[in-house]
Amino acid sequence: MPDLNDDQLNAMLREHLSRELDGQTGRAGAAFARSQRRLAPRLAAWGSLAAAAVMAVILLRPGQPVSAPAVSAPAVPAPAVPAPVQPSATVTTAVEYQFNSQTIDQGMVFLDKDTPARQYVERQVETARWVDPITHAQMELTVPHDQILLVGLNTY
Amino acid sequence: MDNAPRELVERAQRKDQAAFADLVRRYERMALAMAYAIVGNSAIAGDITQEAFLRAWQRLGDLDNPERFLGWFGTIIRNLATDQARRKPRDLPPAYDNRQVIDPIVLVDQKENRRMIHAALLQLDELTRTAVTLRYYEDLSSKQISELLGLSPAAVDMRLSRGRTVLKQSLMNLNPNERCQT
Image 1: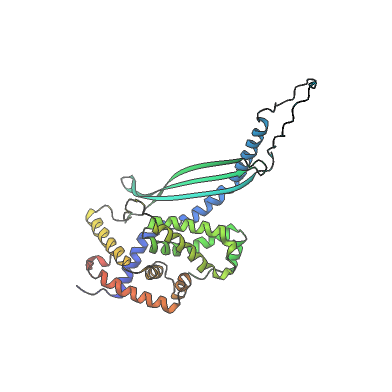
Image 2: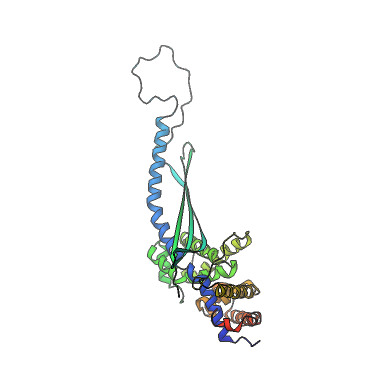
């Protein structure tokens, strides 16, 4: 068996690594761009949703009529009841934002007879959690998202 | 690949997205090579690379000296890849060759060659395999590799030399007709 010289080894390794890894290039840049596009509007939208949820808690709190009835005061004073803690309508703190992403290489597929492509499934889950600093009520939203990416391949 | 320009890292530390996107373009192949050398699977290496850049973006404020970006980022990749390698490997379908799948005989030959090269690389210890992968995929100098791996340039040269010797011995049995195609 003839020896493997340096040039052959170099060519072999370069070709092997290129074939293994070239298909993965570009993913990190795309993921970064997506994360930046997604983050700002969603946090704002979710913040609004959290504020709306807190408002709903205030309005629908048991024992608190939406509008006070116009009746005279009772003759007998009501027993003293500790005042309920008021949830804050305006102060909610986003305490956690998590973005998890997993990409699975599902190998080659044919879009038609002569058009090969590589198929990736990108699974993403976004989770945000808010806390009302006064009542310590928490709200968590989780948004799963699946995306199939097809990357065209050159045929030789 | 040149060293990360200080100015680019500083801009990214001030949350300049364009500057960070430039860093991603510059170092993505390097990150892929490092992660692949540790986990041995290209799709997982791609996942790790994505995650490493997102972490770097979130934690760039912790980097005291922007000129040490490369070593700092290399540590993020190594930690993520090592964590991943410790877990049970995912059940992934084999990644197929992109170019000659039409001919089953060629496909079988290529898969076999690929398996042999992969097995030969696995005979190297992790640092040597990482140095070899960075040199042959991204053409990094010994100095750049040394910065990434926390070794001296002389130690990198020694590992590269030793790695080449082991690989040659392992791959000598590969069909000579296939050597030019792999």
